[in-house]
Length: 268
Image (cartoon, rainbow, N blue to C red; front, side, top):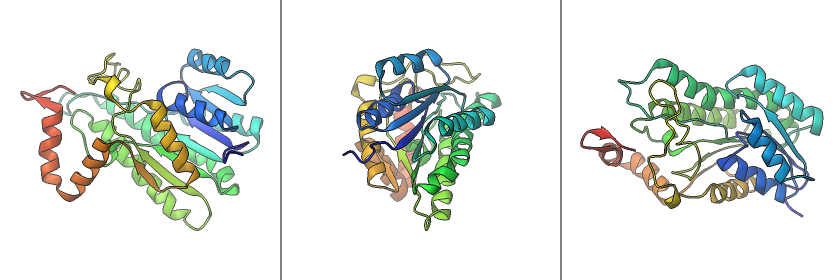
């Protein structure tokens, strides 16, 4: 029997990318899954694909406290409890600090950081009863500030710090708190990344075919939850970046800048 058989798994941002891959893998292991997203059509399509399985869908914007509250209340009404919460919903940005509008930074922080805070707070009483798990899908940008992604980096640093504080508070309770830091992963997050005025950029600057797939990333997260890991860093480039930034931060500054700039222009 699967470790996740009949466990209640809540996934934010579950309609595409890593979130959808997580929905797929947990349902295949017999879990009861609840997924939220702002896009009802994609959620409905996902539900049709998994007809006959225990999948609850709910339209919610995690940047809104009330949306998160109603989502978690709906999960409890249907399933009665929560074993695992995966804070996966996220949004990125691409703009230099000197150009970006404040509202773009606020939007990224509201989704990535406050969405995690809201959903975790509302879920925590049930997770604590079950000695369950809280997961934050963070980023290498939560370890190393990335040019052109200042707001995204700030939001992921904030997520990591908040979850680390929570983990320490709950260390003797039986609850596991974990954050996952993928490197570049093939997903829609770069296509919908906000530009300097907060509008979706509509294109990816990377060759998505060469990146870790969402399905691979979801498989790593699945195993890490079962093993109750503290944190995982994915992809060789991701691990190298984190290590280099820890040991040789000045060198990391130069190499990261070289990666993201060409002829003094932000290109990635």
